[in-house]
Image (cartoon, rainbow over all chains, first blue to last red; front, side, top):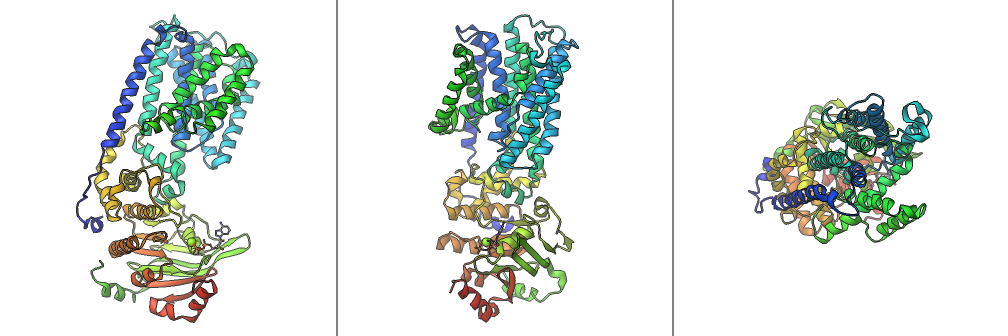
Length: 332
Length: 265
Ligand SMILES: Nc1ncnc2c1ncn2[C@@H]1O[C@H](COP(=O)(O)OP(=O)(O)OP(=O)(O)O)[C@@H](O)[C@H]1O
Ligand SMILES: [Mg+2]
């Protein structure tokens, strides 16, 4: 743009300072998160690994979902399909084929990716509410398929007592604690990957499409390809979360593919803060904790959940982390 | 400033090879209502061509057709000798025919600098590299900043676009469009909502950047149209009413009537 540059060199240099500050803050939060995960099993009441693993799997699930909703502007109402199918594949291959955990998780994740590619190709042709409806309809197909194929899914019983085979065929995952550390490591890697995606050239285009699709098109971006790419990424990571859950909790069931699971991940993301890096983690922790510690209330858990959701929508429109980010004037 | 205005004028009497964008019989029906009707438009390479007309004349619809945001009901569009009538909008943009929007179109949650940079990023080709750090984009910051400066937004470079006033959003949109360095720009009311000072600045900028490209512009500010454009097409009720330079068009009784009839005076 030589003709514009004629005005001379910029008087204010493009300050990369703010961005660098944010990156430094995020790095610190990551380190803090890793440290917390390291010591959590030693903390009384909440520190039992089984519960923690569940939280982490759902947190990764919510982060994967948020990648698509918060940064791609795509509301999928069928994310249980990728989570649930991967959970079945991982459980099945571990139990019936005797695969090692890393292999069954890999296969489960791959199944999420393939399903994401298939469903995504269909869904991205539509926008807004129609997009959400198509994802829901496709996910319902997966649910009914799971219901109709008990030889694979175990039907109403699910796949129970999924074995935790030796990691790489070598390292025994006998205790919940050792499995917990595996889950924590995969979780951190997954969140780090999502962070990188958000802060990549691809992520920039994604945010542009989220903000103003027509404008992105007018700049020559083939937006459907970007949408499909983020759809597949999100489904893959949801698959990773689902496969890990099957090994960690040793169960894959119809709950994982049910539409209410799709709703739950929306809830977690909104409660924690959609479009924030760390919000979905907090959201998942809040929701799973409630289900866990209020289990005595029976069906009332759902009511309490609903109430929390309403409060969030009314008061914390940006979700817990979103509101904190606003207070400290930093994106979190 | 354009260095040699006479040269531009002389270019106007060229052969049909000079036509960068041409439409033949371009028509758009919306459920029985014809918004654009049998429009034959010929835009000469290197000129500033204004498309004017009363509210609802079909100017924006025309832009939507030319950039393929809408599919024409009938007619053809030829850009640089190539039939683009059935192209997709992103592909048209990739051919160097880039538009701005009447309703300010910025990326609200990106900073002003990032808004411009996202257009510069197109130079990298497609950006599917989700595993690469965005710090590679810093290489584009200098150029983005120069464009931000050129539209007078240097002080706002690090602000989110959503915080800008309407006029400044328009300025940002022009900077973003310019960042693509398009061969041909379609500007839909670029000065709408701007204060006097900004109108002058943007008019000056449009003149400056028109040196090596073609501009088709919708604008209601007639003094801007008079001072900038080489050629004017007047549209009314979807049809071409008159064509020519400002002196010719402004004297045309049909044009005067169309404007008065629509309450423009
Ligand atoms: N998607 C649509 N569906 C139906 N009618 C439409 C649509 N888009 C535009 N129109 C109609 O077509 C006509 C032309 O609209 P257009 O926006 O092109 O006018 P314009 O010349 O840009 O006007 P303005 O100066 O107010 O921007 C208007 O009567 C408008 O109501
Ligand atoms: Mg218009």
